[in-house]
Structures are given as C-alpha cells and as structure tokens.
Length: 615
Image (cartoon, rainbow, N blue to C red):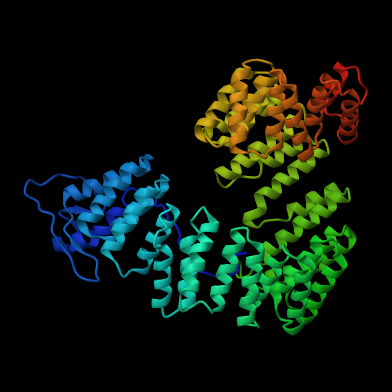
C-alpha cells in the first residue's frame, strides 16, 4: 500500500538537449564578461556557437560558503560540457558521467554533480552515480537532498554498513521527525533485499526519538509488507492505530494487511472503525472493493449506497455502484446507473469551462463501461456508438481501436480497417497500437499478406519498434518463412535482450520444425531464465525436450504449462507426449477436454488427426 505520502528519492529527469548543462554557467559567464545576457564575447544568441581555445585563458573559480561558485567559463570547460552532453545523447553514459563528475570536482558546482548522477543512472552505472552523489555531498554537506541521494544510492549498491546509525541520527536531528522517517523509507526503498531494508529501518527507528510516532509504525508496517512479513505488517499497523485511534491511514493498513492474515477479522475491524468514523471514505471504498472481490455484491453495493446517502454530491460513488452491478452480471441495473452518471457528468461538463473539471475523463470511463455492457448483451452496434462518444485525449485512440475490433467481429473487415486509418495517432505509441490492431484484424481474417505489408510500412517509419518487429516475425513464421522470422526476432533480441518471448518464439519455431534442436534448447532455456513461470515458455521447453527424445522431462514441463494455462495448443502437445509414452487414455481425455473449449483449434485438430483420434 502506498497511501502514506512519504517523500521519496527520485531519479533526476534526464534532459534531452545537448546545451542544457551549458546553461548552468551562462549567467556566470555573462557576469564575468560584463556584457548583456543577449551577447557574450561578440557572439549573439542568434549566431552559431564557435569554440576557439584562447592561448592564455585561465579557469578562475571563487568558492563562497553556502553559495554556488563563481566560475569563469573557458573554452576548455565549455568544450568538456558539450562533449559530455553529446556523449550522453549517443548513449555513451560512462564517458558522459565521468567527464561531468570531473568538472563537478574541479568547479565545486553541485549542479554538475547532479548531472553526473543522471548520466550514470541512465546507463545503470550505480557505482558512478554513488561517486557523483558523494562529490555532491562534499560540495554541499548540509543539503538534505544531497545526503538523501547519497544514502539511497549507497543502499541500492548494497553499502549498508552504518546506514541504520546514519538514518537514526537524521531522525533525531530533524525537527519534523515524521518527515525524516519518510525520508529514511525513501532511502531504503531502493534496496533490492527488502528484508535487510526492514532490519535497517527497524534499528534506525527503534533506536531513535521518533519510535513512538504514528509515522514510525506505519513506515515499519509498509516495509514489513514489502518484505513479505504479513504478521509484522499487521502488528505495526495495529500499534499505529493504538497511537492514533482516529487515523484512517492506520485503519486502512490494519484492514489491508490484515486480509493476508485473517480476512474475516480484518473486515470486522474495518467495519468497527467505520461505525465510529463514517466519513472514512477511502477505508469504506476498500471495504466495498473487498466485498466485491469476495463475490458479496449485495453487501458491496449497500456500502456504496450508504456512502452516497452521506455524501450525495460524491458522484463517483454512482459509477462505482455501476461497476459492482456489472461484476454481479446485473447488466440492466449497471446500465441504468451509468445513464444517471452520464447525465450528471454531462451537466457538469456543460456548466464549466473546458479543462475546468474531470467530467470528460469521467464520461470516457462511463462510455467504456456502457460499451462493454452492450458487447456482453450482443448489441455490437450500440457498443460502437458508445465508444464513438469518447473524445477525451487519453482514451480516444484506444476507443477507436476497440471500435475497429468490434466491426471485425461483425465481419466488416474493410470498415474496421477504415476506422483504424481514420483514427489519426498522436504519437509513435498510438501509431504502433494502430498498426498492431490492423494487423491482428487482417491476420484473423486470413489476409496475412496484407497484414505483413502494413507492418512493413510502419517498420520503415519506426525501425526500432520491438512490438512491430515481433508481430511481423510471428506473421512470417505463420507463413512458414523461417528465415525472415528469425532475422526479425534476432533484431528484437538485439534491441531488447530481456525480451523473453523472442527467444521463445525462435526456439519454438526451430523445435516445431525439428531442426537445430540444440540451438532451440539454448534459446528456450534463455527465455525461461527471464520468465520462469510463463506457461507458453514451459510449453516450448516441453516440446523441444520431446523433439530431443527426453519424453519424461517433456511430460513434466507440459503438465506444468497445462495446469497454468489449459489451452488447446498446450493440450495438443501434452496429449502427443502422453500418447507416445503409452498413456493413451489420458491423452484422449486431455484432447477431449481441450476440444470442448476450443473446437476449431488448428494445432489440436492436426494432432488428433495424425493419431486417428476424434476429440
């Protein structure tokens, strides 16, 4: 749970302009030159920048306690700043960070140290970022952001010796101890070992003067939850509520963390708190959500109705009631509630200036749910109409793609493609989504060649799009063009070495064709290292093991995959392995079970035909 608003360490924004760092010294350089800001050394802001080293120039740095240093911007310094920025733009993060760190040390300017941290973090170089943070602290030892950054990076790097003592001292020295505890949590949040982080926080807080504060107990509760220690999380939340019996934050944690220990007791405690504090909106929403998750839709709706009576202008509650009714499959009731909600939000939108309310976003959510209800009821034209009402920027494009998919379901393929083409993507992400949507529609309609042509055109515009290359590879594999598919999949792996499904797809393609099996095994093994619990990768591993003659291992992998994802493709493979191993009755049962769910699955039909079995 993240409802407690602790300050948190944030990676500094990575600026894109190569002249950003140059601006750090612009005013200082102007002051040194004694010229107006629009002109420096005879060069106006509109003239191209030319760097000409001066034979006798000197770098003059005047340090002033508590203030930024006065720095004479020499051509050498300017060149190094530009070189660092350009290195960063080219992805040479270590070179960029090292140059900027060296400059920070020479000038004593904390802004350059911060910029060095950005460069090192962009390249995932934690030691370099930590070294830059320490340079920052040396320049500004009383800067709380500098100290927090150094501690956070040290924790992330596993350098935790003395960390509990340092955090305890910061808590004791702080006037606002709750805020200092929050900063301690932010420092430790970067540690990958959450149990070790909990131990450090425990020592830091319980040895400090803030150990009995509400913030202390809630911080320990949150860290215990992150460490997977549900009983400790609940215990600390209860202690927090004892310290501050009216705290909704504490009550929310008692409820949420208690669900993992004793759900019924957690619900009982939450209702007891709400009875005493009926205005606890967030806790009551958690209760309603939990009741809905448990399938107690009547109780969930009753909770929301009670809240609505107390706060009749809380219009969001009307939408939440519609969501509960939808989950309960009371579609007509959900639609009626949404009609009320749309009417109210429409009035709000009409009575306010554009952008003054959240009504457009609220209406978009309502139209989406209205469309889902219409789909569930088989009113596909109505679903398309509801989606067409959405003009809110964040959801407009995805709504148009949903319209296209629905038209494709109706068999109106050309109309579906026309909707995609008319949607006008606003950025690369939307262009990718549109291309993938159109390709899926064309592929499912049996127009694979059209889908390939469309994706090829988009790939030319977005040559680094992993999504486009992967989908295009899958289309080529479907057309049995293995060479083209392999080329694209290897390009995806080069762009994203952690893309498990590319390793898996290529390995499976080789295994299914019974070629280059050792290479296929290596690829699928790599995929499994990245995503060990993925059932499709388990299926591939079972299939390559079968192709290589290890039927016992094949059966084990395929059974695990089928338990996780009982789909027809996996059932076809598992049944074949069982058949070959002499377990024919079990094979027939699995094929029959899969055929009930997916009677037209081509892999299942081809497999059962080969073995002369009617599923």
